[in-house]
Length: 145
Image (cartoon, rainbow, N blue to C red; front, top):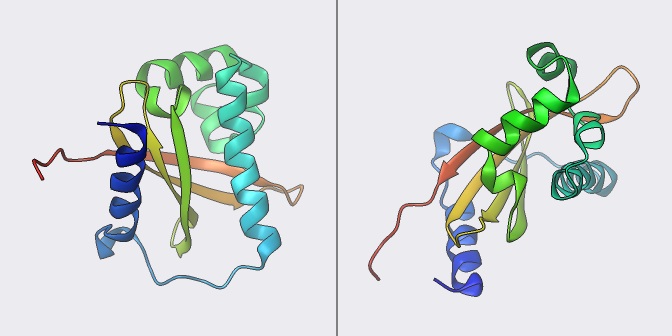
């Protein structure tokens, strides 16, 4: 599957996500959406450079409680979240409000060309900056079309 067709497939998945994953869209000002996407992009960039401390800086306190040091956090991402750790391509989808916080959908093509959807949950920290409170990966289902 080419990168272009994989990204198209991933965008299809973004628009066809099951309703139970999301609540209706919320109107965010452009600053929130831009800031949220920037946090995700900067964390992915830190992963790309194996910058454990840089990636860890965007994790919310709940994640830091589970992984008390940056190197342990990076090791977990490397082994359990390979599509996020080394994406070949990404495309931001819709930003929605959920009971857990704001959810940013991201279409990802991994190093092997497989399409994934990442659901990032973010919340503002005590300093007013957006922090990643969770990330859920959904692997695209291959079809013969």
